[in-house]
Image 1 (cartoon, helix red, strand yellow):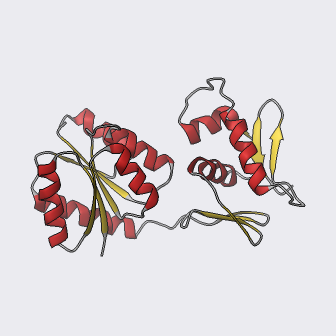
Image 2 (cartoon, one colour):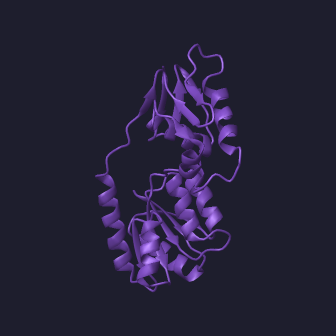
Image 3 (tube, rainbow, N blue to C red):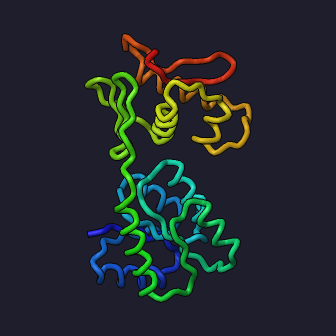
Length: 225
């Protein structure tokens, strides 16, 4: 059974879509605003997120961007009353896998969901990342050093994954800010240094071989050398 999260604030659309999907054998959860939808995605693994673009508290584009930056494995079908080409392009460039304009026929929604699920099944699995005895599994989003499991927050996970994907390369603070926090410039924040300190405390404390290294005045890298 495939699981679907419907993030939609129009009760009529919720009733219509939920009833139809459940009749087709989907397990359906509902969130009525963007913040609730994002939190549900962080605590559950959904196969598909049907995401309205215009939502209270946090709009659909922000939710979509957050899910992609956090590398959530779901596919995203965005719903919107905006039907201009530019709106569709923005939605797809923002991380949506498909785009459906309101009003829509349920049969079309169902066909698009099945197509997205077929496509997702053939996507390659992200490889496990490893530096020395530090292992990060993107599928389970779990990290361990040796036999010790490491608990990571969302941002700590994103930062560690970025460092490990570029193991041995020094990454500037600006690049890290852009990739993990979405800043296209360095606002003078010490957030990178703070989170590097968090990771060091979790990964390198009491370890014989420190893995996170500082290149003074430039940035950070992770390496066993």
